[in-house]
Image: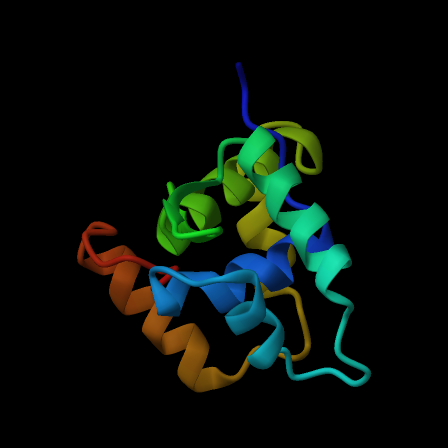
Length: 128
């Protein structure tokens, strides 16, 4: 089964869970930065959806569960980029890079770093 991409709310939960490695629903809510904090049932539902999508797993801990990512952030970033290249840029990496380079928000320093990465053969990860 092909994993579906994450919704913004699911991604927010994953961005909290990735650095924690393991967490209870309450810990995810405790680290929520936006106000108001979501209700326990909301995050519990999102966590179950993420399990169905096979992004996280759980293990029992007493009467509760502790959740952990099944995919790291870098793996998700690569999957997302592949999806964007395929669906937004018709499979053309050149078209995506051209769009990025024509972005007025990119600094000369970032362009130089990108050029260095290309010159090195792309061995370094752009997404870390």
